[in-house]
Amino acid sequence: MPRGEIVIGGPHVTLGYFKNKEKTDESYKVDERGMRWFYTGDIGRFHPDGCLEIIDRKKDIVKLQHGEYVSLGKVEAALSVCHYLDNFMLHADPFHSYCVALVVPSRQALESWAQKEGIIYKDFSDLCQKSEAIKEVQSSILEVGKSAKLDKFEIPSKIKLLPDPWTPETGLVTAALKLKREVIKKTFAEELNKLYG
Image (cartoon, rainbow, N blue to C red; front, side, top):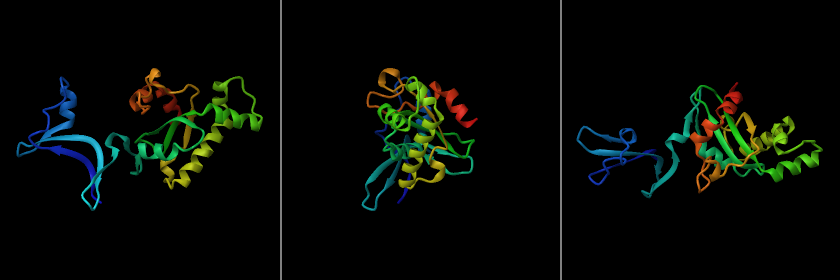
């Protein structure tokens, strides 16, 4: 099926973003015939019946060091069924050959596991630092990734457990609980760098 970035053109396409020249210059192009085109940033594919399906966001696709492409949203959706995950952001750096992840674990699931295993900790933040807890969550993510038939390079090789939930009040997710990827990357830049260190 044909796939690629969805581009809209014609006389009814807006002239640009309101008072935002930078974003307008980034998303709107005029071809040699003078036709104005809006580059949506959505990746779509046409089905045989002519229907257009939006399948991803262009900015959420990262090319790794050895040329593999990772669709962050697709992988996050596949791994979200892991019972240890409350909040989760996959991160792929184009200068590396693997992905990493920031994970806010389900407090109930992780504390229940720790109690069953006899892991001693002072508080949830301390539990998130325990190597046994990190290994348990990572092992569960790997298992879910394999059952979802993800490629090895799509499954995070390293993770960081973060004790505090991501809520709209923290500014890390929207009111609809969608990740604010750039804000999260900026907030946890040090943690992400350590995962690749």
